Amino acid sequence: MKVRSLKKDKVNVITLGCSKNLVDSEVLMGQLRANEFDVAHESENDDSNIIIVNTCGFIDNAKQESIDTILRYAEAKEAGQIDKLYVTGCLSQRYKDSLEAEIPQVDAYFGTLEMPQLLKKLEADYKHELIGERLITTPSHFAYFKIAEGCNRPCSFCAIPLMRGKHVDRPIEDLVKEAKRLASMGTKELILIAQDLTYYGLQHYGERKLADLLRNLSDVEGIDWIRMQYAYPSQFPMEVFDVMNERENICKYLDMPLQHISDNMLKTMRRGISKRRTIELVDQIRQRVPDIALRTTLIAGHPGETDQDFQELYDWVEETRFERLGIFTYSHEENTHSYTLEDNVPDEVKQERADAIMELQQGISVELNEEKIGKTYKVLFDRKESGYFVGRTQYDSPEVDNEVLVPADNQYVRLGDFANVRITDSSDFDLYGEVVL
Image 1 (cartoon, rainbow, N blue to C red):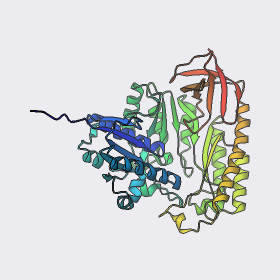
Image 2 (cartoon, rainbow, N blue to C red):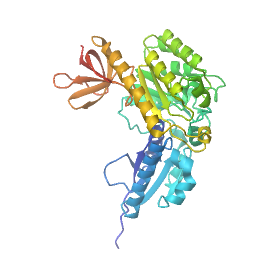
Image 3 (cartoon, helix red, strand yellow):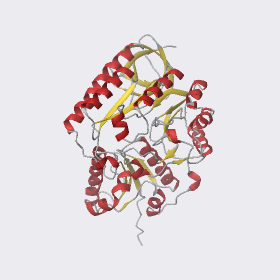
Image 4 (cartoon, one colour):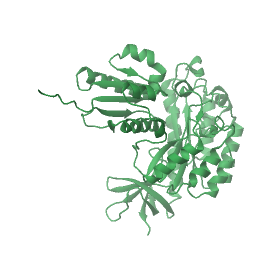
């Protein structure tokens, strides 16, 4: 009698969108691995019979990428190339009913907080004892470190609370436990992320606890850098900068999306902060930590943005000279307050304004980088590419900021290690240097 051998399921997880989504995928893969699934992240091999797409639903371009990805795998399923297709994440949370109607080939859709249900669909158990454990998809020496979920801010343009819900803190003791585990696996840099780092502690402890969290994480042996991303400006806990000055392993870096500077736009955007207070905040931060690198992101073309509003924004960027800066064109998002306003800035004007800001920032970056020539910096090396070892200083986050390039023809560094590098040349957004022994 012949016994039919059953091929073991293999799951390929596809992640779209931000680093917070990436962490969700890593946690999901950790759960799947604990349930003895063969699991891969964005594998290019065609040997997975189950696909899970973790979607982004933030702005139009991201939504379209998510839909295109779902459709691609839906076609693969119809062609018999895969057995099962599941969709999770922000787009699925926000548009589940529409997606079920439009793309019925998907076996099931899940929201952002429905991982246990997704696992159950796969006949896997959600293992509570694994909280904080995950399969890292970044290079092992750095990891994104989500300290909270959701957001309580009322920003008029933002759909994140619709997709991620209210702010929920992770307890300090759980985060320290996860940091120790990551350090034991070789992680040297923690990149703290949340929808809003500023709010950390209020939900769980009743008071802002970001400074306390930093101190506790700073004590974890093996963690050399702790970096903060996505901090809201209003009511920022200034004691964080005391900790930054006290502890060498807390990077002198802060990502604080400010979005705009004109009072008209800040009010329309419901940012809860004025132009005067924003300028004072940036000044206070730089007084407390003179060598800090401030990254911000802005929005061009929000409903109601006049030529005068944009000129205020341009002049402020020129005067403030942010070390790092990015800008998005406004995306008209359903069910947000801004969606009730007329999207009255033409797309080409939005893009012209964004391009003008980035051209200005490019010049600022050139000048700031030229000032670094001849100086020596501690650099963490991420990869080797096109004849260079490529790394970052404490002032730079992966993928979005400047990089340090060291020629690989006559010098050697180990990836994932630190080295002191003397800067010999610079360009718009990169530094070039040589290792100093």
